[in-house]
Length: 68
Image 1 (spheres, rainbow, N blue to C red):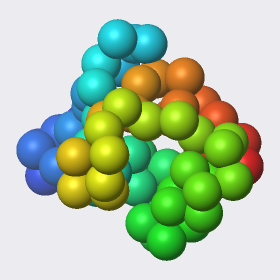
Image 2: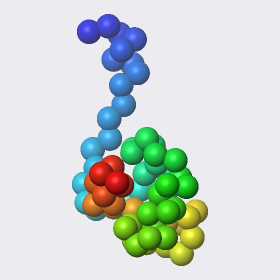
Image 3: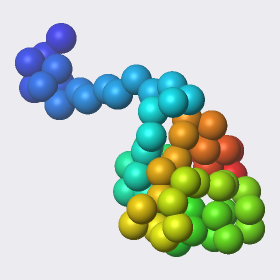
Image 4: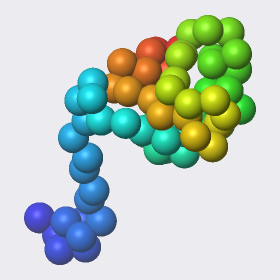
């Protein structure tokens, strides 16, 4: 493999117990934050925390957001 390609790969293994912030969830799903906020407001996602800057999501939330 090309060294440049190897240097640019980044993988993070997630399980159901790995907490993700709103920004991390958005990057993992390639989704804008306003869409995730809408999913929370509709009850599709139920993060821990009171406000978007303190929300923590699980691997289950990542799967749900990816499907939505």
